[in-house]
Structure formats: structure tokens, C-alpha cells
Amino acid sequence: MKHPTQLPALFPLLWQPLIRRALEEDLGRAGDLTTDAIVAPELSARAQIVARRAGRLAGLEPALGAFSILDANLQVEQMVQDGCDVEAGALLARIEGPARPLLAAERTALNMLGRLSGIATVTRDLAATVNSVERPGKPAARVVCTRKTTPGLRALEKYAVRAGGGSNHRFGLDDAVLIKDNHVAIAGSLTLAIERVRAHVGHMVKVQAEVDTLEQLDEALALGVDAVLLDNMSVQRLTEAVERAAGRCITEASGGITPQTAATIAATGVDQMSVGWLTHSAPSLDVGLDVELT
Image (cartoon, rainbow, N blue to C red; front, side, top):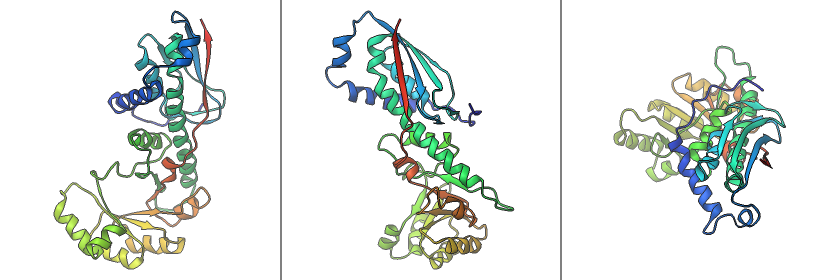
């Protein structure tokens, strides 16, 4: 097992309401009909959560929270930390206590753990590719996620990106400004859009502008934006854009970034690479629950 990435734990306030809603969704109006019919209320069981495939772990505490929320008599033991790389067959956690709630919480727990660990795993792999690129005099490009997250799960999915060694772009519309092409179309020009933003937001708010051309880049640089989103530019154009920016603002590549193209794009010198599929298309990591009566 690889040493875990240094990762501050999430406050329970950020995940407990999500887990409660997921349990409510699964249990519906009548509870677990199958388990209640088969399992006597006095029975106890023990279970192990195991990794069926190798990957980077994320979301174990919220996943285990499903058991504790459903029944405080269930005892949970976390065997590994988020940010760890685990092999297939690795023991991740133990749960012991009343059998009925243990079985009823199973799917909610595994859904959460598999989803977040899948995001962490693809982020880890992409970040490793990007970090392997030699960039003399420059640090490695950062792999960042976007707002293309599952509704309601943004805080957890962005946490999973951090567990994978990536970084977060803005969390929502309220914590930074990103002027996109549709804003420019309505404002009439990039200059007008930036000027209106500067007059509206406070001095602590960062301003990023999406640019499609080098001419737009020059326009944004002249107005002193904090960052530029270089949207769907070729490798040659990205290289020239980085040279023109010359460190005056953060440069971020967006669009067309895949495991196959990531190294080439990183080599252009961009500071960041935003990748939506980390959160909208990552396959879940296969994890399972093995149960036995006590």
C-alpha cells in the first residue's frame, strides 16, 4: 500500500446530509423489504469492505458513515486512509453489529466509495502523466477539475480529485469569475465584460477570461486578468499563448485533454489543465462487501 497523499479530512457537516438523503432514497417509504423478510431482527453480522480492483481510495469515511447513520449500534473500523493506493483484494474497513441495518446500508456505502475512488484513481493516473513531463525552470502543470459534477455531490467529488493528487477550480458561480464566450456575446466584447466585472465584484475575487484566439488573449492581458482559459487551442497555439502571457497571469488549457494528449499539452508550459471528465465520466472503482453471521 502506497503512503497516502496528505489530505485533510472533510468535516462531517459536508457529507452527512448527502448520505442521509441517499439512505432515504434507497429505503423509501417501507424500508428494506428483502432484508426484513429474510433476516431476523436479533441477528448480528460482521462484514468487510474490500477493493475488487486496484486504485486510489477516496470517500471511505462518508461511506462508513452510512452504517453509523442508519444504526449507531454498528461498529465501524477504517483500515486505510483516503489518498492511499490499494491493490485488488485489499481490506478497507470492517463493520460489525445488527445484521439488518448492515445490509440495508450496503449499497449506499459502496456507491459512494466506488464513485469517489473512481474519480481519485483517474485523477491520480492523469496527474502522474502530467508530472512526468520535463519543464525546465517551471513546476509541473496542475490537473484541475471543473463544475461538471454530479448534482449534489460537488464537494465530495472535488475532494476525490484532491485525493487523486489533482487541484480544484472554482466550486461554484460565487467564488470566482470566469468570463466565457456567452458572456462576451451578450456584453458585446471581452473588454466590456471584464470592465463590468471589475466594477461589480470585490477586490478579493479572482477574474479569469476564456479566450479562443491569440487576439483575445492580448485583449485580456492588457486588462490585467488573473487567469486565462485557453479554450480548445492547438498545441502550437497553446505554446505561443504561454509565451505571450510571459507569466503575467495563470494560463489554463481546456478542451481535448485526454490521457493520450496530456503530456504534449503539459509540455507547452501551461500552468493548469482543466479536465471535466475527471468528475463526469470517471468509472467507479469496484469495491465489495463480504458478510458473515456472528
